[in-house]
Image (tube, rainbow, N blue to C red):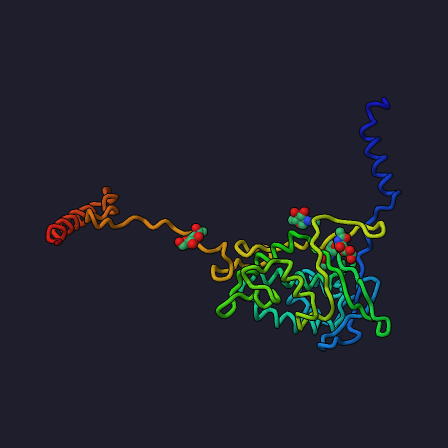
Length: 301
Ligand SMILES: *[C@@H]1O[C@H](CO)[C@@H](O)[C@H](O)[C@H]1NC(C)=O
Ligand SMILES: *[C@@H]1O[C@H](CO)[C@@H](O)[C@H](O)[C@H]1NC(C)=O
Ligand SMILES: *[C@@H]1O[C@H](CO)[C@@H](O)[C@H](O)[C@H]1NC(C)=O
Ligand SMILES: CC(=O)N[C@H]1CO[C@H](CO)[C@@H](O)[C@@H]1O
């Protein structure tokens, strides 16, 4: 009897062990909330705040947030909690408008870009993948963060945006720092986006780390930000994201078609016409043309 039930027992023991070991998820909280000072480049710097996300009740802020972060503001009014204040939403909206000028023409890329910054700034799950790494105690601000992103999301974001056209070039060239578009990688883009020394719109140092798995910090489980990302040639119909055009996404472009062999000047013969057996009119035409070809050929020098 004991033997029979032992696999189940083992399973139970493992579960209980895990529970008592206390390998729990870090609580999904905020690490920042609201704006407490400004950077030398006049970007707002966020306040340090370790606590639960706060309700967002202001209708105007709510609809603004819905317009660029629909996933985060998806609950009905009164249920939405965020780690960003009304003032931060205003700031985010200005920054999104600016980035939109570059990326909006490719909806999939634009969606991924927004998801990345919406989750960083506003998600109530912020503390799971964002860690504050330095502070300015005098004004109670966070001065650098580490942003863990799933490498799957990061690569899809980069691949969906790298082909987006802007003027005569590529939009991504504005995010590669000193690296050329041809050799620009996802790491270069993250380095640029998170570096106030290079990017005039970065408020503080953001170190992006790409992760493939969840990890523990101080015995608590953390997982990288892994919102579903959209590939530029597929789009995402369910979420209303269209695929991008060939000029913005290489994978959409038709493959090189092998040129149908048409003319062989040496024989003075149109081979396509031979395929017209089924159709009388065409057959007749083809015969006429053959005659014409023969005629022309015989007259050729
Ligand atoms: C936060 O995490 C929970 C649990 O994983 C998830 O259900 C929820 O959708 C997340 N919220 C946002 C806004 O991403
Ligand atoms: C992220 O999501 C993708 C697709 O849903 C999944 O294949 C991958 O394992 C996830 N990565 C992490 C680190 O959770
Ligand atoms: C298409 O043709 C061009 C020029 O012949 C070539 O450089 C390119 O590699 C081809 N692309 C594919 C996907 O075959
Ligand atoms: C696996 C891991 O911990 N990756 C990074 C996520 O964030 C932490 C905390 O800041 C970094 O130290 C890690 O490099």
